[in-house]
Length: 110
Length: 115
Image 1 (cartoon, each protein chain N blue to C red):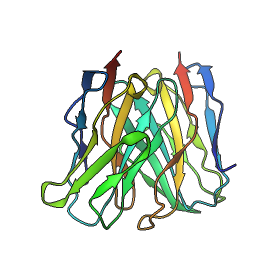
Image 2 (image 1 turned 60 degrees about the vertical axis):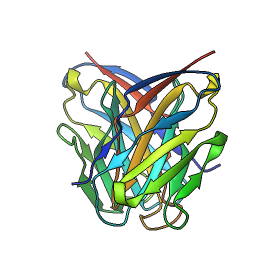
Image 3 (image 1 turned 120 degrees about the horizontal axis):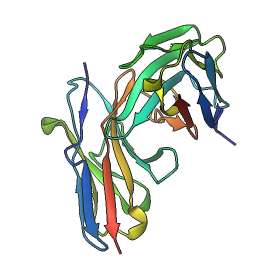
């Protein structure tokens, strides 16, 4: 069965620091990959997605992610975080059904 | 406006009292799914549906039922709720896998407390 692993459960950064959140999945076939963000008290919103083509995917709010097939990874990056990026981030993989990682809680210090 | 609508948004109930959480989407999506979100456990899939009359168990289906009689609706039924079903529930929908618009669209969530 497919699974998604997010390595960092809780990350604390200062504003302007660079961010990288790890995500690995265990499915060997063709997958679609996603990163979602959940701001406090809200539902999940799509940050970016990978289906095919360029493995470097750009999303909203300055986020990007790189799909590395050989490493089964889809890490999320942002060069300079802002206080408003404080949220929980979820990686997800889809073949037929969609499975989520356990999430990474990101806290940005002003 | 494209949306997924869940009701109720908040509910406090007692053990054993049957309840239904409704979910409706207006995007003509084939795929619909229910998740529960608990601290430290992320989103766990309860049931999903690939299309009308096609449903399948997710990772945590015990204690829940679903039905998909119409494309737009996917209700979640708790026949005899127990306190361990206290959680935040999300309904979501999408186009089928393999399409480049196959991301999930989420409802606002339903916070359920079972006493």
